[in-house]
Length: 82
Image (cartoon, rainbow, N blue to C red):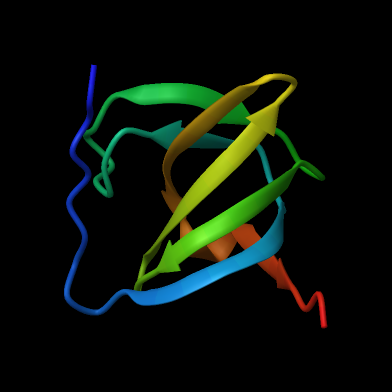
């Protein structure tokens, strides 16, 4: 199944590493009312694919499984990998 994700016009390409700061829901879309895919815990490493004003589009590597979704931007701390 191919899932289309919508992006907002204010998003900037990111593709950098981040760390989750609290226990937060990983959502299907960038809305508090959207379905929850998983619960992320503090300290989990994620890849930030895009970042908007309030939401970050992230990818989580969970073993061999990759999950992609949205979290509130304030709960992800970006890491500079350079």
